[in-house]
Length: 104
Image (tube, rainbow, N blue to C red; front, side):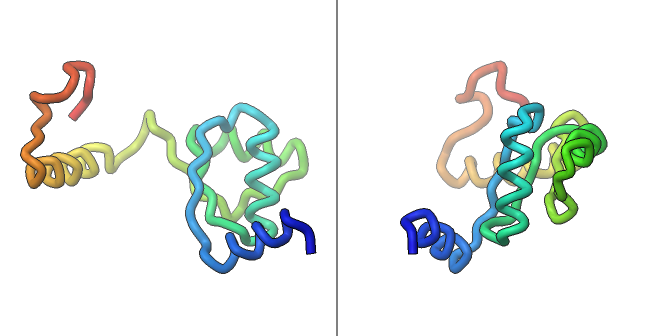
């Protein structure tokens, strides 16, 4: 068994979720399809779902089991921000302590 096979087996045994933001790069989509097909990890692709799927299908890649998050249309953005704020309060850190560029 090769080192790569050992790493893959360990990853399968302790399956994680991997978020891939570079979805305009075909190498990312190819890697995502391979990880999904080998059931190494769950994949979340960041970007417009229809564009990503079209690009993958054009190359014959199966991303059916991938999840997609489009940051421009993220419905739960405010809810996640509230959760983050509540966690920060427990640590005595508030949005006013953060950069003014930070969105809440």
